[in-house]
Length: 95
Image: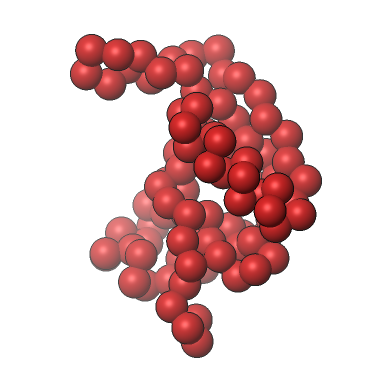
């Protein structure tokens, strides 16, 4: 898994990975993303997690634009096809 995220998302992602016992590696990207009037440093987070099919309740008709990675607890990390973090979520029971 390779996820590109801002500093606040990086912290949240690292907390989740650490709590789940998943080894990961973080590096700073050379570029920044400009949103509105500010710019944000981007980070890449790498971890060895299995990619799984994106559950339909998260796709909203755009399954081809998302990727999902399963954590040991069953939680999902969902990214777009470019690796930008979309959300960290708990799938509904029975999924």
